[in-house]
Amino acid sequence: MHPVLARVYAGRNIRSATELDYELGGLIAPAALKGIDAAAALLADSIQQGKRLLIIADYDADGATACAVGMRALRSFGAHVDYLVPDRFKLGYGLSPELVELAAQRKPDLLITVDNGIASVDGVARARSLGIATLITDHHLPGPRLPDAECIVNPNQPGCAFPSKALAGVGVMFYVMLALRAELRKRGAFREKEPNLAALTDLVALGTIADVVPLDANNRNLVAQGLRRIRAGRGAPGIAALLRAAGRALAEASSFDLGFIAGPRLNAAGRLADMSLGIECLITDDEARAANIAQELDRLNRERRNIEAEMLQQATRILESIGASEQNTFFHPDWHQGVVGIVASRLKDRLHRPVICFAKAEEAAAEGRLAVLRGSGRSIPGLHLRDALDAVSKRAPGLIRRFGGHAMAAGLSIAADDYERFAGEFARTVDELLPAEARLRVVETDGALDAMHYSLEVARLLDSGIWGQGFPQPLFCDTFAVENQRIVGERHLKLWLVKGGRRIEAMRFGAVDQLPSQVRAAYRLSVNEFNGLKNIQLNVEHYE
Image 1 (cartoon, rainbow, N blue to C red):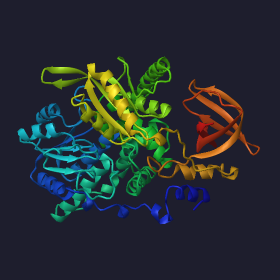
Image 2: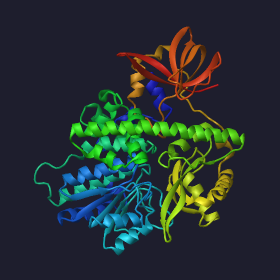
Image 3: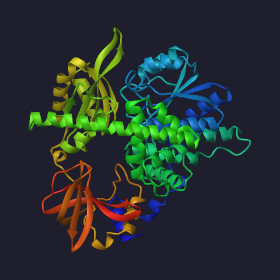
Image 4: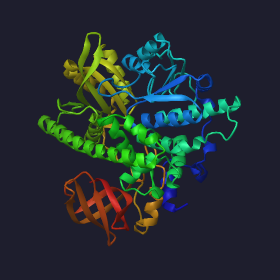
């Protein structure tokens, strides 16, 4: 192995190169998931009895890819299956009673949730009252009470011994489809060639990276399989179209492309329009249709970026007006609820503290439509965001109407009049739960990079790796002289750095503050292509 890669992997607790031999046979067996055999039997019975299946999707990239995995696999098994994705602006997240009423119009026999459902106690109860069965596939943390569903598959449910708790929603659905194929095989359902579920790993890779779940060994294996298919030109037409719309070469597709190119374009549909557009992009086999949808998603993503930039400016002005106050919650009456999560993420990075951003919304209530604020939060290591919201809900019963999520990201809704009260309770909870050491800004790096390794070969090796949450892309640290710098594209800084007599091009994206003449910089080694020529470029992420 190249010495730079060997050092990088050793720093991520990889003890042997064999740990990086990603093969489908090396995945954790599906049987380890609690409830998966019952789920497979339920689905197999439904298919063989000709029952109508309806997938209840979510409006982010994980939910869309999980839905696409289900649609493609179930259709290949001969199921009568369709999907329904809630309008995030009217129905909000998850299998709510209102969404069940909408689903019931299609007369399904079985509802299958993907990337949601573990907290849908009322929705599952409503489905049961209408005589509709429910299978929940989810990965979010459960609340104190589980829904009364026919079956639940979730590695994070009580009593599940599955070794990897980091599966994304799409990973859970992929495992359920593997178990279903095994059950159908046992029943002699495949008289000819059985469906190849490995063909769905590109969708699993996209959803896993885009949902920013920890890349443990099992998830890295899933992502590696998917990237292999995309690079070989054997991926779904929709994923290929999303990458081509951004000018990315399929043969060099990377985890960066999934997380920062394809993922945001897919998410743009759920943030600004209807995620059905994104799901259609992923389930079509028509390359021309996929290309047309990808162009529309690209347009929506540009619109999303413009909205986000304006909201971030408004949030920055709020910060400037309050001075040194350590504010954790932000609200503006004009903010778009589809973009508050991204703004929360940007502010979290800038402030290095947990942040929740709110936008106006409406929710169904006994008295009709109720004006609420819908929030999306992001946290930093050291504070489990969902647990913090749970603490607030217990300390102030009724303050939070609904909430759910993970350690690093969560969503919630509150009554519009309760914003100030919530802001105070959340700030108090953060102050109590966030350890002092977690408040320090710490940038972990892979150390210095020898000048001989500033090469296209090393940059390509690093690009081709499987990187993501919990298994970060290599970040190096060196001291440079800043020879020249100028603003480009209004939002970025172009740099010429000097180290050991060598002049190197660099970029600082999303920041235009001028650097001093000498800096200690944390940077990533990347490949920059301009007019068909490829050169190395340092992307400066932090400096002092």
